[in-house]
Image (tube, rainbow, N blue to C red; front, side):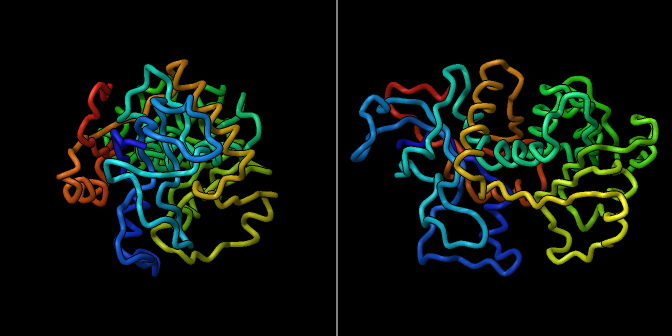
Length: 308
């Protein structure tokens, strides 16, 4: 497949930087799991009708805890199993398509923890991040009451654009008080958590009886100590979300939801910066610095193919 855009996630910079004792698993690596482009050729058993299809990719390089593939999407071409190339709606740009793999699949899986979202209260911690912003959009589109925490006014403005969302600046407002006010003291049915260790105390106060925490990261402390009875007394559940580990059935459902929302216009990844491939080091530095919005690399255009 010819790559038109390559998405960079914190997972990519963490893997490269040796976070949590990770190491370079191959002597030569082309980074990045997410990307988008056009199918250039197909292998045995794949319909030739797919040639020329616009697609987005997932797990091109692989996830944590495994060697994965050596060659990801930061290149002009990549060869992947057909199932990992998902049709991209015609009116969705390649840059947006490159932002779907890790963030959108992680967000979808986290939100499945509550079953039907309609009428439920969802607290999204770190809502201005890539996963957080997509979580907000999915939750709003499915009828949830959304409370979204952010750490800056810039992040608050970005999240507020997604509709009826109570945006809470965690540096200026008391998160538990805002959750209590929004839920008449009942708490959130689901908390989507960006850093379980950092927010444990807040989550305990904010969680409803029989509520669920769906945590997709724990960067501040990879080995947190959990106050067992504080959660047990709530009848709570904690789910550990790994966007690289969806089952085949989960992926099928997630891809269908993502595609439908893209076509409806209810899902639109927020892109903060677009760099050419030659500026990959600067693009990684932006991700490491926590730049708002997703960071994308564009590659030289294929003749006759528009990046839009």
